[in-house]
Image 1 (cartoon, rainbow, N blue to C red):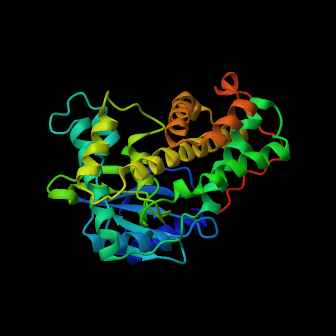
Image 2: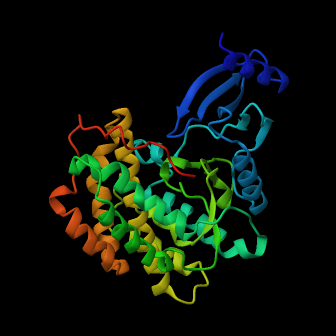
Length: 349
């Protein structure tokens, strides 16, 4: 038995779950691993976040804030912050993603699932200034650094080399010019990974509490447009015809917004920024670790980027891409392509 397994065993014993069955549930793009813990008819979820690589305190902090709003974040059943171990309420297996792919589903469909998620966001964004919240700022420096990940990890896969520094600086300058659009609006809590993989249906709960929330530990303070575009422009799935427009109108009807055009510019600017960041993340997975399964989504990312840049009026970014990464280079890299050793895989925090 490894030292980590021993730590987990002691943690569960201390939490009153000694002798429970532990089975792998999920891994994510971080170093966190999730296990399902079963004891007779009782179930819980163990979050294993190795110290030095992950920190469970932001998860605990944001979960407490979401509970204060009355939303369904997992209850904390036990915690050992130093060891990086949390025992969480088990929400089950009914993620939006699984429901959408279940041909036998009769209760929920794409329209009703997305409507519930949009209503959660509209409620959060209206009440955040009243209820109050705390999270680090999603400021211009962070937004530009995220956009820069495309240069670091995707562009070299397509170009065969790193981007020349003068061209790279022109790219960053174009994104810095877009910061006012990307940070528009009264600040709200931005959950950042608000999409169908991280949303769940919780039967037996009413209203907005039916929507279970996962993977919110990286929440920041920023524009209300970010989570909405994260939901409605999913890098991994296409929405039904007209659904994005209907959900935007649903959101608008539930908000007290004075400038819808400015909101839409923020929505599209952040949509482009988010999709171009995801290109970098996918490039990192292939370029360093040989994980190519994500690359099938690259054409969808580029479609989002091109449409959003035009709608947001980010002409400087459009001009840079046309010059340095024209359409023939906006595609899936060859699967055996790797990044040069001179490039670091480190993600700046």
